[in-house]
Image 1 (cartoon, one colour):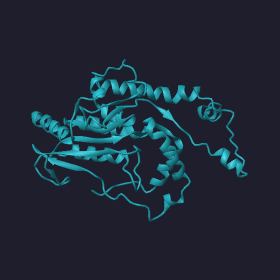
Image 2: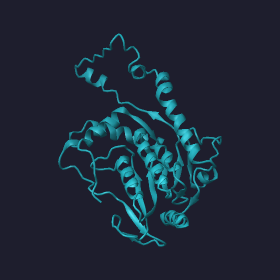
Image 3: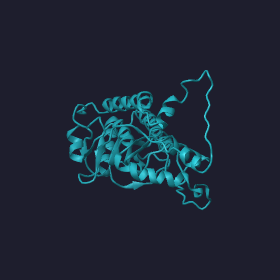
Image 4: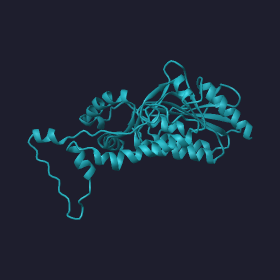
Length: 298
C-alpha cells in the first residue's frame, strides 16, 4: 500500500531527536546517540536521492487458515490484518521508516471495514519517542470500540513498545530464545549545541520576560547539570502514566516483583511468569487467536 507521510518529515525527525524525550531500552541508547549526531549534522537528510520506503508492510490472512491474501480488497471474506510496529518508534514517518501515526491510521481504517475480523500488531522494537505511543493507544481503543480483537505478537517489545503491547487484548512472544519485554521506564537526553558553537566563535543569548520566570526552567537547570526539576515536572509524571497504563492492560502483572516497573528487561519465560506476556508462539498463533475470538463473536 502507498504510504502517506508529511511533506516536512525531515523537520519532524530533527525535532524528535533534539527534544530527546524517549522511552527506549538501554542497549539502544549508545547507538542512538551516535546515530542522532550523524543525522543532525548531515545535509543528506534533505537530498533527493535518499533511500525511500515507498510502501507500507501490511499483511492480511484469510479466515481459518495461514493463507496470506491481498489486504485492501473489497470482499465479504473475513480476514485478519497484521500491522508492523518495528524499529525506532517515532510519531511521524520519514522516507526510511514508518511513523506510528501512519500505523494508527491504517489500524483504524481496517478495523472499520466489515470484512476485517481483527488486528495483530507485529512488534519488534526497543522503544522510541514518547509521543509515538498516544496514536497507537487511541487506535487500540478504536479497534475495541468496533468490537474486534487486537493482540500483540512480539519479537521484542521494550519501553514504548511494551506500553503499546500491554494495551492489547493478549501478548504473544515469538520465541523463547530472543524474544523479550520490559524496560518500563522514561528517560530524556539532549544534545547541547551551545558549547560547540561558542567554540566556533558564536555567542549564545537567552532572555525571558519579567512575567515569565518559570518558562523553560526545567531545561535551564538541566543544561546546568541540575536534574531534579526536570525529573519532577516531566519524567516522573510520564513514568506514573506508563505504570498505570501497563497495570490497567495487564491485570495479572506482578507489579511488585523486582525490576518489573523499574526498567529491567526479561526474556520470554520470565515475561510469562511475571504476567508481562501470555504465550510463546509464532505469528500464526496470534492470528489464530484473533480468528477464534472474532468467530466467537460473530
